[in-house]
Image 1 (tube, one colour):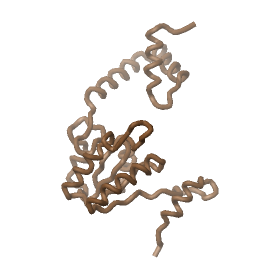
Image 2: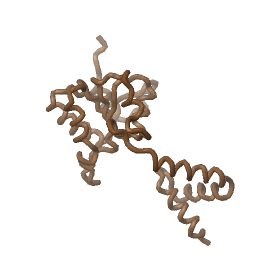
Image 3: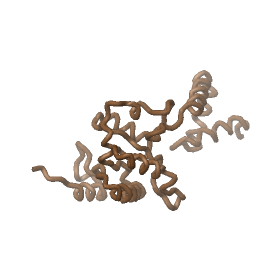
Image 4: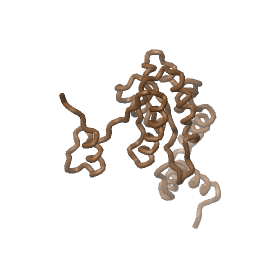
Length: 199
């Protein structure tokens, strides 16, 4: 037995979500249709409205309903600090720490020649234009500690150094509360390489 075309279409649509396989998509679709049609309509409406009204911040490229996101619109932040991230969710994570008072630039990805993603796809030209204004004194590279994230950070660092702007990289290493015996070798190597003096 197979589902009707409309149910199959819904299951296929749900599979576009990260981490949702065929069985999970089928379970979600059937739950919405069998038990919670009102929630399904609410979900459909919220999704449509978000797709139609949420765009990109003109300054940092994060997701925003307004031309400038709340961070970029704030006058109380330090314009000399610019943190470069891979995604809007990374920006949210840093904002939730309350430990950074500068501005952001969101790449929306990382360099990946195999996938055909180059500097122009990440808006690096826009980043360099923003730095060219002269307000930023330090660029903090907070790309993910993956091979692609490291390559992206290295590429941007080379471009920024040529402009005479200080470039730093977020530290990678042992998490607070972690025990060394349970930390993988790559993380320990990063932690040792990035060690700092206590005096």
